[in-house]
Image 1 (cartoon, helix red, strand yellow):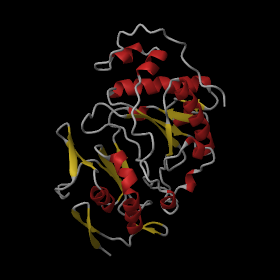
Image 2: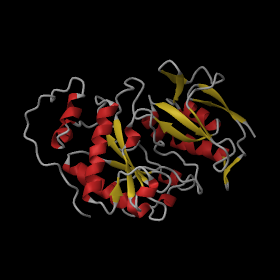
Image 3: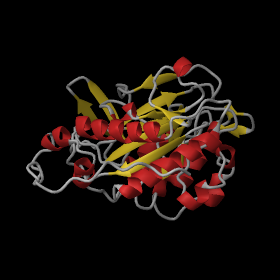
Image 4: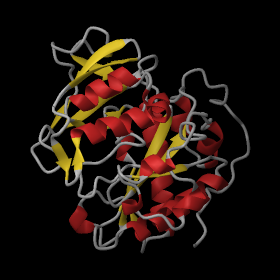
Length: 318
């Protein structure tokens, strides 16, 4: 079953609406979900190159990543040519969002930077990845430790479920910090947590060496790395969604609470509050004595700062 719609000034043909994507959930249901959530999702996608993970036959079928827009893509789509090689979709309208989903995209992965300043992310991300046997409660505990450390540094963190077993913590930034500065800061941030709570958290990349601990993945801040978008469904059993939460909501939330079926009833009236308001890093970099990172910030007025340094903070025990 196909249909044609007019949306945000474009004519869009939606195809195979009856195709099952999850048990009891069709491609048409997924399109309807995004149409309902577009007003809050798009401000978080706007201006960002987007990679699609396409599942033409539903969540359990074969999948593939698509970064380069196909030659058959409509001319009205916005795009970004990266290094003269890859033309990324930029989803700046409901029509562009639905076009991507109609291609079989279940997961949308935006850059942390925008096309106007591609080398300067406007948020950092901490990906909390627990082992399946320990689960979400372990990720929640690590998130609380990260929040306490951020508070000590005068920074705000915002949590969302990953849509699987973990959590993503977003640190909004003004976009004047190059990727190496952001990655270096997040590496130090994670090392402090892992050192303070060695029974809970680790920065060890190899799963076999993590010893049941939560992996604090700061490498998601490297150029070219992406995290699934806020409000985006995941290609997992149950059609769970990567859903933004307040810290109060996180206290008793579980990933399975947020699915394509349940979250439209919870849909906010505005984009993820706070995440679009950037923060400065200079004070935190000074506090952590990351002077070499300070020197990498273009036009920073604090490169030669003589401010007194304080001992690096340590997150308190839960």
